[in-house]
Image (tube, rainbow, N blue to C red; front, side):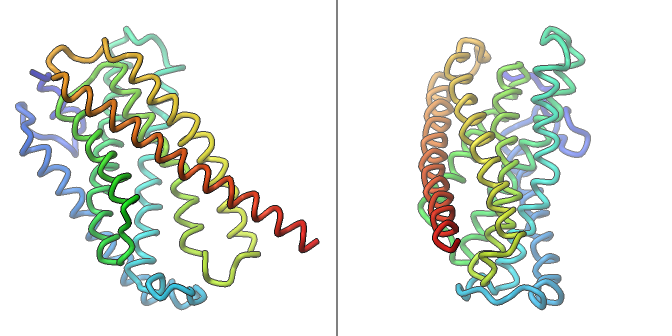
Length: 275
């Protein structure tokens, strides 16, 4: 069975020493509820403040306070997950030896915290997308894969360097999301030539290539080549699920990556014609 220390790793995310499936589910739902509360607050602020300054979108759904709040809430999530997960990657590769128990525990706490916030947001975001009538088949696959992988890692309470890195690799991919949400918030509002709009997309594209395609692909390769280091109590069917989830997620990222590249080339071609 997994080590009981997983439930005691992060002070504000603790369960009992048993760290049961029900406790983990309630922990995730608690933070998902916190994101819902945050979205309500941001929706009120959007109605009172933000929508007064934002030009109207060509898509009526994007003029909803809750839709604006969804993008703002995603940015708030990134402000926690991104620095923590990238710091964990730094610790694991430049912080010292993996045989150092203090280092591994410090990295595990960071990975556990980032992973919990990440999966809680994904759960809540599915319902917010549904409310905003923006839930697509791609969103369902993307979010389901992330939730599945996160749950499998936490259920097995993996404190091995391989599991810590897999978690950090996945959550660090959110580095591109903060720029993506700024871009999604501004598009279709007649701001195509605005410096903020162009800058947000350029930063998103750069971070997408580095974190989601580069680091994301390496994450899948890393996990598939280190399955022998997984805990002995992790059932084979869960290993297969994890591997499949990572592969599906990576394929989806490359599918979206091709779209980003096409859009970038189209923008450059349009700019040349304008000149």
